[in-house]
Image (cartoon, rainbow, N blue to C red; front, side, top):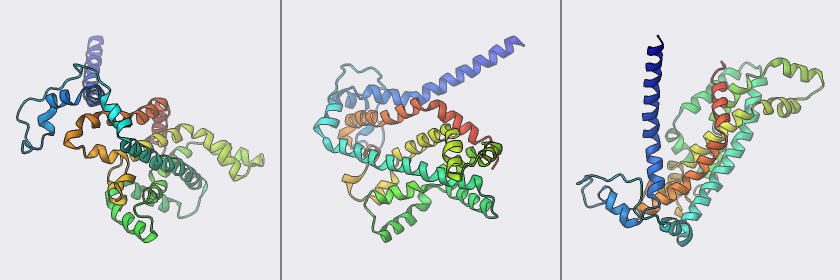
Length: 291
């Protein structure tokens, strides 16, 4: 029995290791290749990004993890000599941060309302939220475009920020988490004279810290990597985030794209590493409670 157990654990460990290497390889490759010169990148991957091959790779691609000569020229070109890319990075920040902050604020109030409200239509409205959450963004892209044009906010940041603030995902996740709070705590607070605002700010929100962290991380990653929204709702290229540039790399800027991709990954990685425990705890707890 012990041999079987050790064998199964060894197989599982080997499979996890293989999947980990497969998932980490593109990230490691991007980081190491960002320190290569443009000539070395073209020598290793030139045929992949060439426009003269008819879409086919005519020779073996050399996946190289260690550059022959480490250079910072790509970072200098992208962050110092070409300020438009740094401007696109700030565009991403100014788009995503308001969405994360105000979506959490609105979701907290809405989730508390779903938790405390015992009316007839609560289940129906919550079910409506779930249906909206299951819809891909491409389904609501045209209605968002029409509404933005009607409101006169098309080609402005508000065309992306306003739909993001009222996204239903965070309401659903936070509501499931708030329903874990024992009702006796709320009753005890009411007996002590606490009002709804005190119950919300001093009892519910402190116990939802892990859920708030997990939602903030997921929302940040989702909107940090958005491409369709700014392409459709922001016609001015100067207002578009850096994710749009990274999704359409020019043939002669592959090395620059590697460096900017590394810079673009830093906020997401730091946020994930800082709140990894909260992310796991929030998702696990919110998914373990019935609505």
